[in-house]
Image (cartoon, rainbow, N blue to C red; front, side):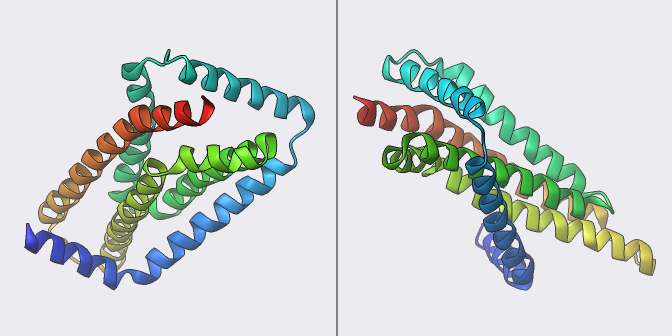
Length: 206
């Protein structure tokens, strides 16, 4: 296990420029999403507020279905993860990963900014509960998983161009291990989202 962690941290260190790029992309996407939320018209704001009020009411009355909520949360995350995984074993996957990650971070920024725009100071508290800790952990996990996936995609692309032989079986086994670790963490964060987040919202709303 120690050997696996050492290799993982070495991989992160050798791809630190890519990690910095992904964190920068995250910041820019959240910023763009927030800016887009400030330009919504009254009808859009009312629609979003209605959805949020419905969620708050169900949360306060403890009417959320945990199993359904888990499958919705985990399902969305696992679909994104599988898409990144498949793009990682594609020679043209890197640009598409960037687009998918930007869209995910954009949506997060849009949601946070919408809460703040509608509820003002309370919106800051609501958005903090919405993202911490599960969304923050998810973003970190996605950044590092995308780093591994982009690195693999680029390696395969360069191997084809330079006609080099790649031990694909060894690479795939390591990649599957990283995928398994990612899925385990996503299960944990989905559980945090469906149990911890409603609990915190109930405390605040009551």
